[in-house]
Length: 185
Image (cartoon, rainbow, N blue to C red; front, side):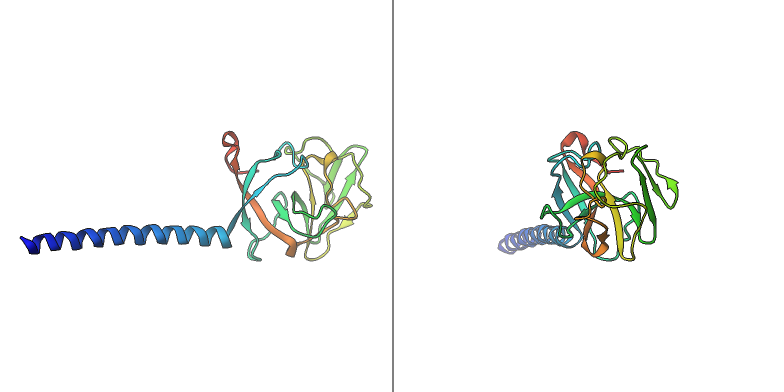
């Protein structure tokens, strides 16, 4: 009988150890994923309306040099700028592309083709000081906010082309507010 109780105690502690081991392993895996692959960021300002609103929370895939930044990607940029903070903008053109903006009609062209931009708040009428057309240099991208006339972006000489080494990550998911949780386009 004593042997039976001892066996039950051993079985109980083996089960507890297995559960604790599983929980600790899951927590460590989560911490590693969050630390090295994904981060949470908050939206400040209105430059990405209507796509992103002030105080929304986003998950970004950290740019570790393995991810290619493509046209249309929403990115977090850490390149030093006049605001002294990270920027969240949409990639409009990548290295080697020629970008042109007709500020009279508000249309944006990449490589001579007018962009179809259902995500913007309104057409691009605000000039920021950069002359167009511009060719995107090697290792750079051209970014703009979706709220084109209230966005300081690559059109501004103090922001300019973004060196891809300063792209911290690509926005992949909105986690706040609850009624807007989901992937971003």
